[in-house]
Structure formats: C-alpha cells, structure tokens
Image (cartoon, rainbow, N blue to C red; front, side):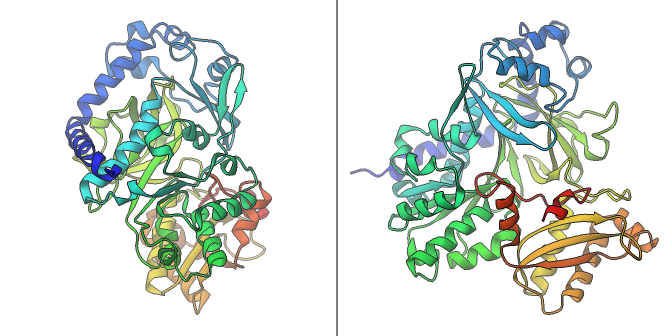
Length: 493
C-alpha cells in the first residue's frame, strides 16, 4: 500500500515553491488584499457606515476605517451574533469562535466561509512546508495528536459556536482524520485532568509521530505518559515521534524541561494562530522568526507599540515597517474584522521575506514607572541567566511592587524552577543586570534610584498549575501572562 508520506511529498514541494514565490511579492499582495476586502464588503452595514465606496487608496482606508478592539466594535459583533446577515462581511458567519477577553468578557469572533481557508490552509502550509524543507514526512504515516479544547459546539441564533480549537476538529480533512487522536468522546471531556487521563489511555500504546499543543500542557501530557508507562523518556515510549508543533507561547522557557522528558531534541514547527486569523508560521528550520501570512485574506497594519494608546496613532502598511521595532498588530480580514487591534505585539527580524517574532501583548507589560517592559525582554533576560547558571524554569510571571513596606519600589518576579539556582539572590542579581541591558528605561530607573533591583520569589513545584486550576484555566489554549501592570494576578497566585 502506498504511504501518505510518498503521495503527499510532491504536493508539499509545490506548496513550498508557492509560499516562497508569494513571500517575494508580499507588499504588492497586501495592497491587492486590501482592495478586495473593501470591494467585497462595500454593501455591508459596516461598509456603508464607513463609506467604503469612497475608499480608493490606503490613505482613504486609514481615514474611513478606525482602529479599535472588540469593545470598540461590539455593536457590530453583537448584531452578527444576533443572526443578522451582511453586518461586516456578506452573509452570516459559518462559525462563531468563542474566546475570553481580558476586558470584554466572552468574545464571539466570526469565522466566515471566506476566512476558513486562512485558518486551515495556513496550518497545512506550515506542516507541508516543513516536509518539503527537511524531507521528514514519516509523521504522515502514524498517529498525531492536537491537544486542544472540546470540539463540542453550541448554537448562537443558528450559528455553530465553540472554541477555535474545537472548530478546527470539525474541519480536519478526511485523509488526516484517520491519523488523529484522541477520539471525539475523549476530546469532548471538559475537565482537563480527567481528559488528560483519557488521552493517555488512548495514546500510550499508539504509534505517535506528531504531537501538538501549548508547551505547558504538553509537558503535563508527557509527565503522565511516563508515570503510567514506567518509561524513562517519551522517545522510548514513542520511537517514531519526529515532530512537535506548538504556538501561543514562547517555547524557549519550556524547551529544557520538554527535551529532558522526550530524551532528545525533536524538530519543531512554531505557529501563530488566533481566533481572529492565522497570522504566521515557521517556514525555516535555519532562519529566525515566523513568516507573516501576507497572502491569506488578512490585510496587516502596524502601529508603533509605544503609541498604540494615542488618540491618533500612526498606522503603517507592510511596506513601511522596519526591522527591530516593536509594533502592535492591526487586522482587517475576510471574517469582517476592520482595523482590529489584536492586542499582540511583534518585531520584524527580516523584511525579505517578512518574518516576525511575537514579543508580547499590548496589555501585558509593566510601565508603572514609565519603563514599558515587554514579554520578550523578561523572557530573554531570564533564559540567558538560566543557561549560564544551569537552571531550568518551569513557569514565571512578573508584576510591579509600587508600595513596598520599606525601601524603593521594584519589579517582583514569581518563578517556579525545574532545577533551582544554588544561590537565588545571586541569580536574581544576574537577571536584573540582564534587564538593565534589555531595557534602557529600566536602566535609567535603576541608576536614578527610582527603582531598586528586582526581587525574585521562588514558588513551590506545581504552584502555577494550581493557580490555573483555581481560575478554571487548566489545559486547552490557556496561558500564564508573563507580565502584569498591576498585582491582581500575583495576589491571586
């Protein structure tokens, strides 16, 4: 019998050639996408309200389409949710992706028939591009698992509604479904720990070759597999395991722990999916960054991160961005999102092609004293020092201490170690020195005696998991924020 890996290799090479070709014309393709979006949505309620018939140029687009988050456009989202057609995109959505927001409560993001290829075609492109680049395709002939939320769907005024990860399960192509685990009933279990045990039951004896999920929850899966099987490593349990796919968080803080559990370094592909769109994916095993998805129904704009909360922030198209600067991401899409502030920040590491690093969240930063510390900076500082001191970090978060009982204010780090430092104070001092190098504003505050050096608190093993459990956010697509500009999270922690 001919194997899937042999049948699909020619198609993988075709896709890789097309991806590389389109990446060479990204700026031109973005302009065409902008024109197509406006033309298609001209007669929608949003298009009429914002004079789409008068938009000819990008300058016109910026004049007529405001920037806003979910709350700013809530009236349109609510009309779509109520079942009204032609609100922001022709017709009604195929699905509503239900997701939680930090300020808007539960959000309902439309997925239309025109936007679905962005989500599922991009995931396919990421995996097949890897096959064409590396020649590694044996994972197609074995079992694979995507650790995700429940695929059970509800209905909102006749529109199927669920988590994005659950919606994905309903759109998996037939040729891939026979390889996929866990079973549908197991995937529908809501309680993460109960679900995890059932997933272990189904996969512990399977020929697992591809494993995908958010790193902290994959780590829990590995730990339970090893505890149940008595094996020393995941590679001993799954000798054909050859590909790890992840997204949602920076993998580096979890790399050492996961590789120790696996027993070796497994090739990986990073993706950048969101309910609002599949933004980017790793297209190279040798070059840094994720290839921006510039030919898939999303028109990207970028606002300098430090100006995103200004009354009239500058808006840049893809052709205007610069390498090394931090930008907030703004989307207009075939799902009917317009000038939508995603809430994420990115940095370009290349513009030929356009590759990015995800640097954090617009609302996940510390600037209690004007320092504007971002997620990338704290992760980089901690990881460098951890490597130098042979320390492994399980999880961490950082918050300001503005009103200490005595002395100057400081940044307070809450860290759960896999392998703790021999001298926590010396380790913390080294991290502080790295932060001074990472952020000039932080350096000025330290040198100006506005802040004292950071304070690090070591938390017991399992502390973050217990916190996530207490918040009903264990498993699925949930993540611990790296930074908070207040102490609400750390006080609960």
